[in-house]
Image (cartoon, rainbow, N blue to C red):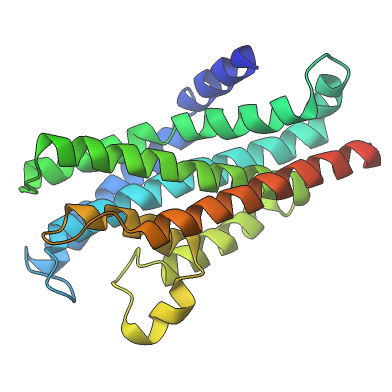
Length: 240
């Protein structure tokens, strides 16, 4: 399984589209948003530079694992590569977990590039807060890596891209990626994993601790998405 993970990581990092859309695109959007706000605050008094640093880092991380993993898995199913793997000693759970782990590792560049721009733009955090923020956002990306594997196993190759983009944009819209979620939408947003993902960063705000509700919600989504990926992989195996 470690060999599979290493090969998946290398293949992703060599992909120019990955670098463009999941690393550079969120960074450019971050610069756009902070310029639009002119260094002011968003709703709730949170500095725009800090708010959008987190939301664009999570946007890039989710994009890295959702679009990359789902489309790649769907294409592997069509090309027969998954069928070939089933003929080896690699068990299905190793394939699923390997894909999730490999995809999650590739989120680090998207997170770190936006963080670097945020630091240059004047976001001030302690060393512990920077490390803690990077760690929680990286760990949280495993949830979306599992969702990407599930979508890749479920959607046909010709439909996987629009399916992923619709899911991706809806979660981002309700999750506070583009603007803070108001009180009227919060009751719905709490069922959105992107909203919970963004809430992981609240501990860096003065007077706030770790949002245990967000941690618990993401843990539940992780279990749900991993189980769905495993079921869909087994179903695809029987269909083959």
